[in-house]
Image (cartoon, rainbow, N blue to C red; front, side, top):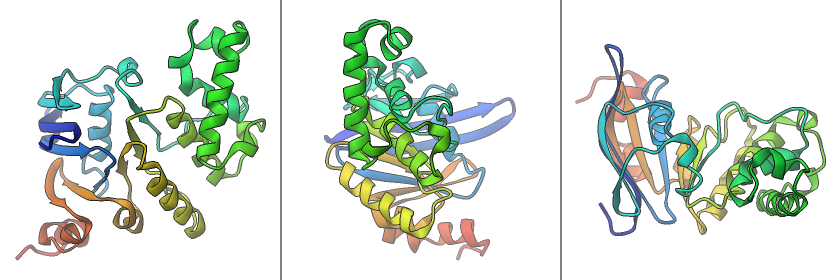
Length: 254
């Protein structure tokens, strides 16, 4: 584990009944690094994300944050630990404005709790949260969307807003779950540029099926197949790995 490690996982196993979803998985994420998780459907990528985020409980395994051993986080502790995540399904509230959706991610800045602070019962907190939301939307070049209802947005714009909501808590670790899913070529290139820009302020962990995205933006890749890490290293190293070729193309490994 490097002295610059923000998050390190070792010997992670997750079992659901008799099914072993993750088996002895390892991962390391350093400061200002972009790390990608790739693998076929059902390989365990989302389960790994969910273990880090406290959604599933590991059967065994060790976690370190900022170089120190740490219990596996509970979901409600993520923001205070400097971890934020987007979801595959975007997860915006359709009848709220863009700004209100983003404000939900800024609750750690409120003194009086999410509901009262975010929606008008405490004016000082509401002003602070709106300022944070505007700041986050500007970071994804979506400030002009602030007053629009979420259900009026084009799909690529919902992706921007979802990332803004994750950014509003000013995380040290940003976890992006399929950020390029459903996007066209032009929007994928925009997403690549955004990830490159964000890395100067945080570390980024990505689950992504678009190989052109991970090969373009990731410093390190971990390849999962049937719950195990079958390869890790630079994009070029992983691209040439026989086990990766076999997992994706169904060919035999020499």
